[in-house]
Image (cartoon, rainbow, N blue to C red; front, side, top):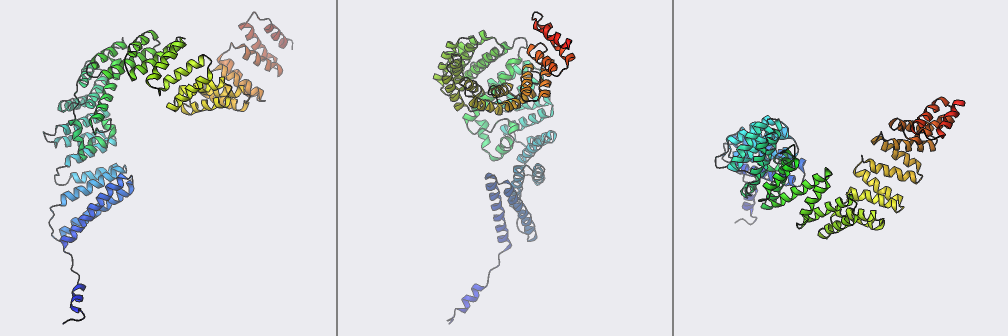
Length: 553
């Protein structure tokens, strides 16, 4: 009989102590929780907080090992927990750009008992050394990782060899890089490695090997297995994700992105090879590249043909460029739009404004958001003195491409013709912000202020312009006149003398300098300038009269 329930109260007051195994289990759960929190913080860009959590997990892991050892607890799971904790800490150091500490953490793990993922540690260490520009150490780590690769891991070995080749190339050992890339291509040929090999052979001047490399890249098949392997988080982070500079492009998550990357490497390889094949006939190289691309990559062959026509334009061979572009005009879609845009430009340069307008309209029928075609159409309106229509075209082009320099500059010219100086200045100032060293924009701003009798701003902008173009005699003369009109005669004389020094046949500048010396009663100096004027234009009688006056004085 226990009416007060004293026995039950006494039993509940006694707390059962936890066993060492249970305490160790709770500590493991805390460590795993800290690792999860580290990953979440890193994903939210809270790198410093993530590092603090990773360090806390590392300290607790060390205490747990000591606790298990002191209580003679089984340590079957220690290797996995140690690896997870220190790998997490190393990744946190990497996220905070603390490379030395990250390498130290990886090195601690690498010196432990052999772990199934030790190869990944070596790869990560190699990537960090690569980022530190310590390429010899990076190569050493990659080679250790390569030795630990199983024979059936063909794609992993391929990527490691490619990284070794990259490190050799950065070190200047191009022939060693060639060997690594060739070994990688023999394992699993891909576009990126083939491109790197081509660059090496091109740097060595081996044109035959370069052509063979290009053909090999073109014939490389599209294989999904090259990016299926990247689904593994360790391989993705170590070989592709963390070192974008090393691998050149982002990792491929699907066939579409892999195809885009393949086109990227093929197109850049074609651009490198085409002008290098025949130094005496650059066009022959483009023809050869197009013939190689034609069967498997027709769209890229068309792109190279467009670039070939552009090079003819830059060489001012409009006839050949027009012939190629008219052939491309027969194709459909974007190719036709680009061809029509360029044909519009060529026709405009030839003075055939009507044909230029027709080609611009044809390009806009295909793509109404073609900024270059809109500029071409606006130029045609401008030449026909249809300034309002031209302004609309330039504004529409700017709406499509906000930094379209041609549209902005031409809009400024159009506003000037429409007697809108303030709007013109705003346009040219925008060009100045986009291209600060553009003398044409600076001149237009200064000229508008000068014409508007805003001498202070005109002097300011002409001064900026002379800093960019210090030898233009006309600009120096105008700046000299502006200073003279604003009671800065010494500055005005200085700039007119500079103009005379760079262009000593400008009669206006010569007479103004001579007249200035006469007004200051420095007759001896004025005689020289009037003599110069007489030498330049001996048929003009007034030079003799101006010359005689200072002599009499």
